Length: 187
Image 1: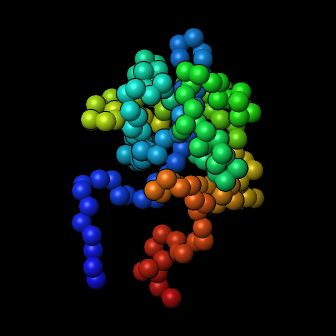
Image 2: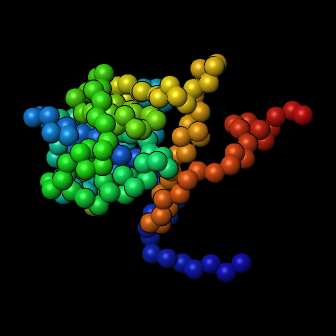
Image 3: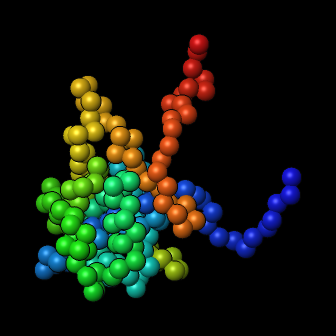
């Protein structure tokens, strides 16, 4: 099977694409779209996001040490793209997109009400890595929209139609192929 060899680069796709909300010390909120995001540790619960230092939200996070990761959905695809293109220096993204800021429980940055899951984060460490700074953060609280819970209190994120990012495109997550452990489950 023939293969092309490319220069070193990031080919780990698809990626979760999230909207990260922040607020400066005066309370001015912003939203930035981030695809360089991931789980770091289960116990303690930790995540990371990576931003270019010149992005408007980067110095806000460095100053406040807080942000909220808001999961994205088919309904939020336009807003997700817009928040990655437009700068908070020039536009109030909450206002322009008709998004609803909600007060967080543990941090000053707002939640996005239209997101099915909001993860409040406190920065533990900032690591300058080259083109991006990685913000290693502790999860301070998680909010889940009750409309995606069934009668047994099980959360069904699939009902929100989450989206991912791959090579410049936003994609809706598709059909379930199995569940954890299905490959070794006794029949």
